[in-house]
Length: 426
Image (tube, rainbow, N blue to C red; front, side, top):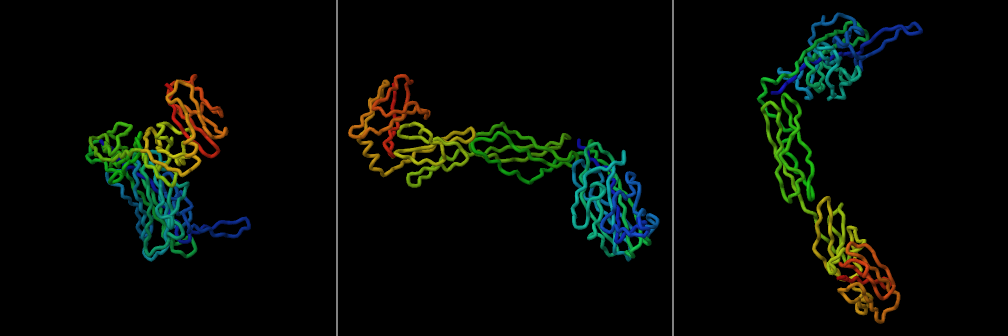
């Protein structure tokens, strides 16, 4: 069952109000006036840890005036829950007074150490003091007509802290420029750490009303766990029922469970959407572009049914007429586009193709390149099926005897024109 922890928090409220002045003797022997209207000097909450209050600077007897003061919070009577955030409010009232100040701190009852984390929620009127262990006023936060209120947030400490007390010191200042006539008040309020071991019947509450869809290409290997807030256990991390990785195209519904360990649980669903690799290609003139971004690419000559050597960019501009596709790799997904026809109007290519013969095909290893009436500036490059260059020659024959059987790509170049042939060695 859950433990709700409310601890007595010692928050020290010290109000150095209006013009809080202190007479001291300077080196020259003259009297100077130091004002604390902008804040408490710190550690003046009368808490056990601080030990002193505002009467160090303001004359008079503590709690002797007719005003009222209080430190309140939204911590439930069942106690504070470790890690949860609560609002602490300090209030002072004093008839006919229009200048006020305060300091509030929180202390652990067991050893009077400062406890919890203070969060400012009104930076215009309040500020940290005493090494961020207390809150006090700013000059802009001292005015009021017969009363003044300040608020801030407090994050409850870890489980096992126990009782906590908030301590507050308040000052109602007559604003006459002296230390006389001001009214100093102190107060405290204790809270306990919640104990849910026998009373927990509430389900955790998810931190968000609905979970955002998780979308990935090909597969998803991990999921970011959502959280829920439990009245006794604080923040609870959800656990899911999915088997990872998820790689089925479409929508998979994952169920997250928030269990407080005390017999109370609640579930929440999340859609995991897996999409396939986008294999669309756009054609602009003779230039092909894969629509998918951030992937790896390998262009394919569909007529040769082979990879095109060194064509691994997102954009590909063929140099010869033909049908082309692209193999796209995204993560662990590999998919191939449909073939797209590219027609290039090039008289030189047609002339070269009409006057070129590569035979026999299939071959047992020796291939003849008959260039007919073409000049001798032809360069022939042979690639294996994986695009590795294995032969480069200006001769009119190719010897593949020492190479294994399979498919080879022969690229024949004449100046700026290229013809590609597929050769099968058997």
